[in-house]
Length: 373
Image (cartoon, rainbow, N blue to C red; front, side, top):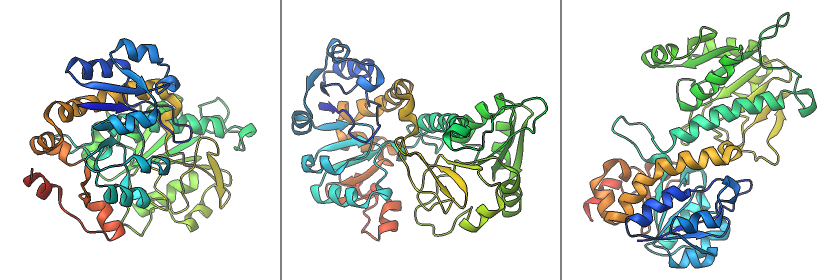
């Protein structure tokens, strides 16, 4: 198979989908790999590194036109729509339920879209999403440390236990997931009082065994949430919100309970989602204020740690890329039910239920598509 690795064009996106070692594995299996010039530059990899791994360096247009599978990091952006064609496989983080225009373009062009974030494993977890979630959680707390400083519009609180000063409070909604655990590890290690809100007692017990005693676990209900809003200095949201829901966990009115100038770090980054006042921001303009509460809602936090993120992402996605390339897309999807969960669209048919429900589009179930292979 001919595979194309592109340089990401999203603003401040420095990750690359395949590091040189990943490219070498694809080439070893007999596949031709094109890598766009400087695709790995933001992650510290040179064109020479990729050429030594067996890749051919080319420009974006050549790669889009020559490749059978595009292997990338972020969603397809408008500037790339012109390259979409029937049968082209695009393997990336698609997040189709957040990008209606892109979804319609994918359907109209009849590409095959496979989304990292929806691929599952035998335990029902998301192995291609969880590594980035952990980095996002850790990076989100590091952002709190940065923007909590007076020189960055914060209240001037050092999120660390300091003698003679009230210990800062960090509340994490959905704290037992990968992003919540990543945030809690750093926040707790610096001595903060960390409160984790979750709904699964069994998982809370498992996580409790991994974290120090300055982490408190509460059942996530309305009463506990409101109590936490009143005392917290940083509220971190780690819940992936169902895009079809119209309600919220934290409403605009609830922000009046919070300390003036306190912070919301929305790791999940769902616009108008679990937190009503949240909207996606960028690394260029990461914060805004609503009801006197600072909001940080950057939707690609891991890009700030591009080298680490690229290595983890490449290692995670490569086994599935090899399945697609070695067996062919249809056979790989048919034989691997977990990979099939990542199928967003197939030659003009929308196969992801959440996106179909949100935008009232016709759904063709993934299982039905696979039966036709």
